[in-house]
Length: 102
Image (cartoon, rainbow, N blue to C red):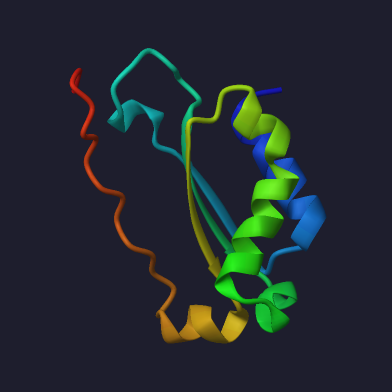
């Protein structure tokens, strides 16, 4: 199973999101790793009673093994359904790689 599939399965199982998107952004960064940089968009009712920090802590806990074994960067965009509607279903663009090899 690919790293992207592992991440997807774990997040979906943990938070039952209304909206879930995962983008492998590894190609945008320096180095040879093919599955090391990901952007996640997660919209879940579960986030309603949680601060932004608690949401991130939850996902970091769910993905602890992946963060130890190959995931170098994880951009998390975590919204309640109401916040997602206010954001008009859009997320910020990822920054360009600042690595020396790109």
